[in-house]
Length: 232
Image (cartoon, rainbow, N blue to C red; front, side, top):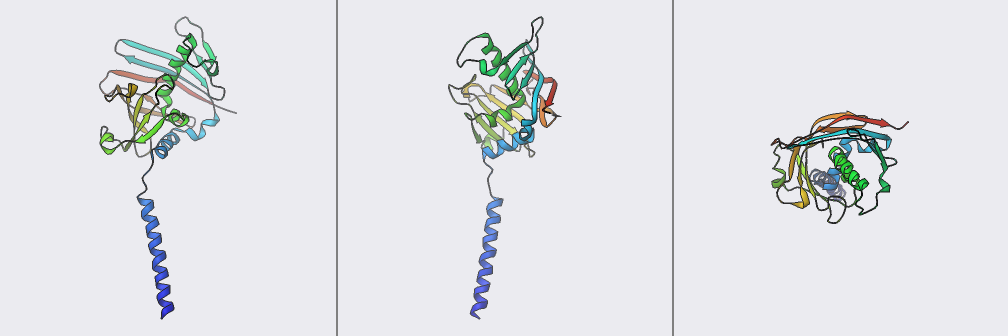
């Protein structure tokens, strides 16, 4: 009789332990770092090592101003080429050439390159940049975009990089594809720019949004001539 009771208690303990582990798994709250990693993976970051070069044309219309810049980036060597604008020749440089804190023409050019690359590949940049902090948006903050599954806040530190102190709120769907972002220049409480992320296309292993228009039509931004060269 005693042996039967002990066996029953042992089975009950094992059952309760299994249920507790299952419940813990079901209530696991995804961390911000896990979410941004999944967003980057959905965009193709795990296969990025196979990429030899990325070429694209950045287009934007902001009020009366228009921008058009055609770039090629070779990630393995961090070599950048800006295709000729109007009558100018192509400009090619290694990003390692740029001196920290310098104010020369090459630095000004690199600021434009980084701006355009961040627009195209922001989730990758967040994962690669060890200086940024990422946190989950509260349900109230995430409700700014009702159709989004969840949101993250990306903070850039003061005194680091070309745009120190900036904040980006990323909103994504259940497939971890970014649907919107809110840019807060210098960490401002009021949004500086809100854009939708639409028109996704695949280029080799990468999935990229090619259109980033503002809902209020204050900005039109899109990418053309996107191509990815894979390493042999």
